[in-house]
Structures are given as C-alpha cells and as structure tokens.
Image: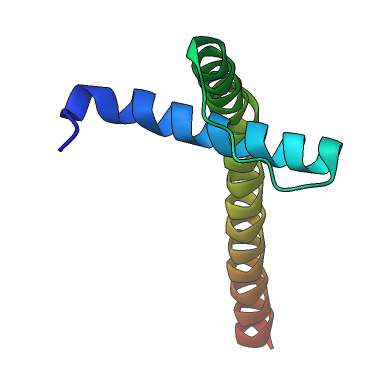
Length: 95
C-alpha cells in the first residue's frame, strides 16, 4: 500500500498523467500509451499540481460563494415571508 502522506502526491501524478495522455491523444489523434521517463513524471506531476492549485484557489471558493449567496437568498425569502405573515395577522386582528 501507499503510505498515507504520499497519497496526495500519487494522486497528483495520476491526474496529471491522465490529462497529459489525453492531450497527446488529441494532439496526435491516436492512443498514446505513455511510459513516462523522469521528464514525463515531472510533467505529469506538474500538471496535477496545477490542477490541484486551480481547484483549491479558484473553483472551490467560487462554488462556496455561490452556495453562501443561495443560502442568503433563501434566508431572506424566509425572513420576508415570516414578516409578511406577521403583518397580515396584525391587519386581520385590527378588523
């Protein structure tokens, strides 16, 4: 088994390897089975690291922002709905 502290590095490499292989398949138009040498390993690990960085710094905060905005809108609707009900009840009691 892979030591726990190496799992992220292995995952980055495999992710980069997958992206790099797909890029080569699209570029050459054929299935390229890449047996990486040292340079190939570094390229694949670099691609995986860049994808991790983009995901961590850009994509995750963007979706968190959308989620917070959505929850805020739901909270506002609920709050406005409750205040409308209270106002309606007050009017009903006044008559």
